[in-house]
Length: 287
Image 1 (tube, rainbow, N blue to C red):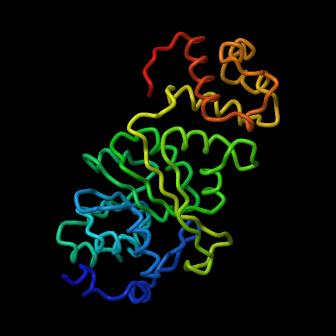
Image 2 (cartoon, rainbow, N blue to C red; image 1 turned 120 degrees about the horizontal axis):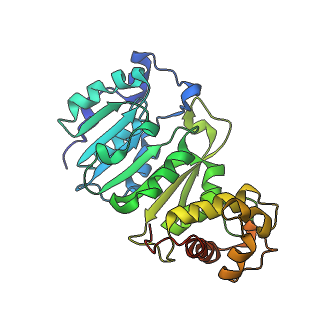
């Protein structure tokens, strides 16, 4: 077996010390440096030999190293912090064309402009933008084989939540409608530098080729935004934010208008989204 690509490089901790990197809390940075944990994350991303991996917020490059050593055909890393971009340069040189580091804000970049064809997303997501990025990626799932992302445990719980629980909300509905959602393992604060105040959870989302419950994503987003925007209100009140005649909407969907959002399952939300399309005379396109 050949030596890992990164075998000749200084250790990750040595790189951090040599470059004087300190995590910037304003950017949501918490560096993960344990090679064993990083290897588990890369393994969870699945076979990578024929894929491009998109990584957001590589920091000093711990997960980047693990992805390259796991055989990723190519890694495209988006990093906002210029200090980290500079620290990654030795890894770029060692990777022989397999690593591209782009300086910029992931929220301002359409990944389809830098990654062509199927890709996997693997990232220790900055806490302050993780949820927004996940929802954005779920809107364009056709070219994404899977998302393997480390997030706050609370976000992971919201992604996995079931109807009738306090964590159940818009994020759970959208994620579970568009993908198979798995929570893989939790990490304590002490695994990171500096330690955050919360635990983290590694999540794997595998987008469906087409959602098993037909609906238009745009309409589903409107319905869930309205319903959970006033989650303590009955549907006859909260759904007025999606359509002025909320009672007609519920009647068409055959859903009791006195129910509340947290009691509805995926099928019920999809039915409401389809009813919204009928009331507003929109087409049947499922996206």
